[in-house]
Length: 85
Image (cartoon, rainbow, N blue to C red; front, side):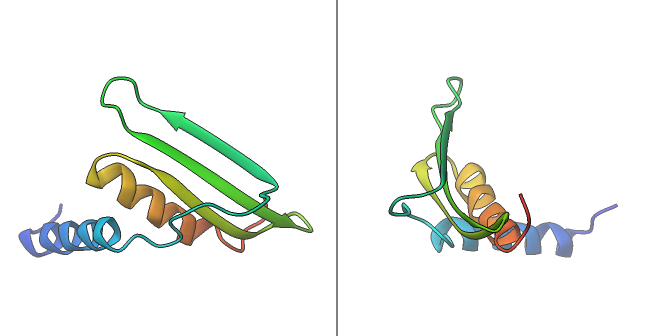
């Protein structure tokens, strides 16, 4: 069960990634590029990947949307960089 302190930490963590997104922008000549949208809320998120020897060497995201979708994309790019496809 989460505590009020945990809730506050996660709120701040999400807001930090929303206000200061990591890996935001486009890659020039990505190996993989994909974009999705949510027609219910209007969020759009795209990701560009650079892959070398089956490993995600670089990743960027672009798009627009709510704080949750943009922070999630920022967090995801941090987690995926360096992982195998």
